[in-house]
Length: 556
Image (cartoon, rainbow, N blue to C red):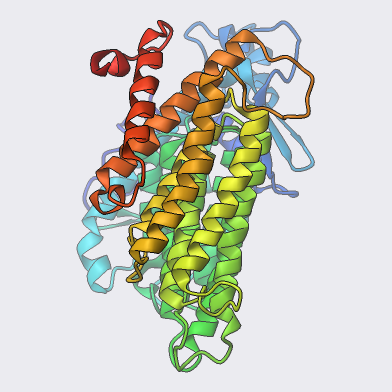
């Protein structure tokens, strides 16, 4: 890529840091300056999109012979194409209120300019951060690398100004950076690395190296004050970063490294909230601080999954949020709890998550990730009930095991209603499969110390097999579709075939799970009937030439 020129340094290499001499940060490309100004300007953008913003028929990227200006010569347009070239970075963006647009045909050129600027600045940033790492981490005095550019007197510039796309001087990109040994002034350099990565990640959101450098910039911003700076300042630094990730997710919601970066930020916030609240009523304070954070992350995941369907990373992050709540939530009977309802509130919260998934699957019948998340949320809900005795505190529930069985039976009933409408969709069968596995785990005593008596286990298994194995098998093998019984609409032949394939696969999976539990298979009253169903399912699947795998053919 094209290199950036030093300001006032002739053609000398701009990324070499001579000892005890003056050097300058590489000049920012015009595209970077335009975009960072839009990001800083009020109102701050909350949504970004890449689309066709103009239809003027001009190909700005052809205005220069080499495909554009040198990244260090952003303001020097020459020749007859000067006017068109000057319009390139400005016309590549459009901001309307809180919406920021990027012109799709200009994206390759923008990405090149952003990448060149990032790599030029990164050389300085990595060398500076590495050279100061020892003193910085050990708390030594380094007047060039400290918290947000503190001077010798210890006056520290607010971290929000550096990371919030606001308050930075327009001359930052062209200013000469002071040298302290081999280190460029940290405040200017961190601002430049944040600007460079912000622009690059909005076009290339899965650049792991750029995300890593943003994390280094955040840690250097905290400096030796980590764990000692005011909580408002700490949270503002990371909340500002979360807002940038929120903006990025409005266009790029399936970038794994972006979600990993968000999880890292959240882990720092959670750790900070917990470490700063010690003493009396610690449990109540933790819950008051963590629950709003978790609800905010869940709301984000819901919006992202709604706008960008089948988003595995959003559901995985949602599970991370509820698992943090689960791991820090107190158990029942703790002496330091002044309000016992705090324990029950997590149960209600997790039950709401399971109910949300049931409603979600009725509208998104092909979202595999949602079904898997629902199963994990259900398991956390039951684990919380067992560990806190939440089920035993309900008068109508009896023991915790009986309460858990009642919860899962309700979910199985709802899944049956979904199958009556969407039996040709595999995800609904997978959701039923997960819930069935949870049911078998409860009966097998894998959630708590309580185990069912032999007579009770036989009764519970008999009811489960009758409603969720035998009945399903009868419908599938008789050629009847598990649809709304009151409808007069005749299903298509392909829908009937898919219903049968997914249903038979579900039956084989449930029977396999039952067979693996030696303690449970002994409680099945009619094992021969189960073997007959298993063999019939394998034979039917083996005859279907459209099944894309050979498992059933090999075993039949």
